[in-house]
Length: 174
Image (cartoon, rainbow, N blue to C red; front, side, top):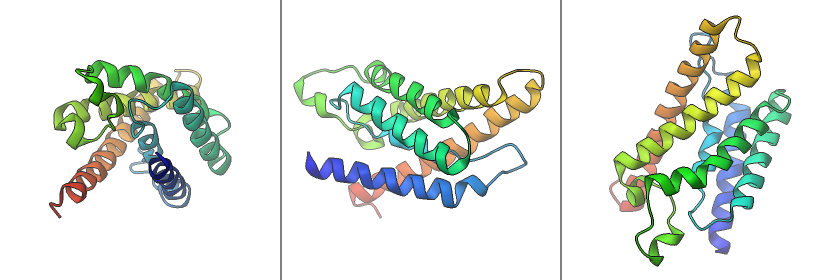
């Protein structure tokens, strides 16, 4: 369990630095910003305590808010997604036996189809909540839809690409 926590902390720091130093400066077509740090929420194992998922999600969101000057947006959105993650994982992968309890979500463990659905739902909910809180009104709903759709698309593509290469590396394919 100690190695898993170290790997999780390493992923937390790596995604935080990537977001703050590189990804926050990318605004494709003035509406699409990659929000890759949501990947942290997706990596929690099934047996990880729900309070731990919420605390880690809030901490990641708070760190992003501090460095990105988005007061509370990422923290609230990440906490909401952290609340949904265990239930979504249960919904997409019902437990068949006691060995499935410590399952870590990945393309290899869930299968490609369920993992893609898992990733798309989490990213979509995150983008929806984040940009709804950012806009706080829907007077310019076209811009809001562009932000949600563009960020959802680019984040999903990046996240699934990283997971594909991570899956290939773990299976010895690359």
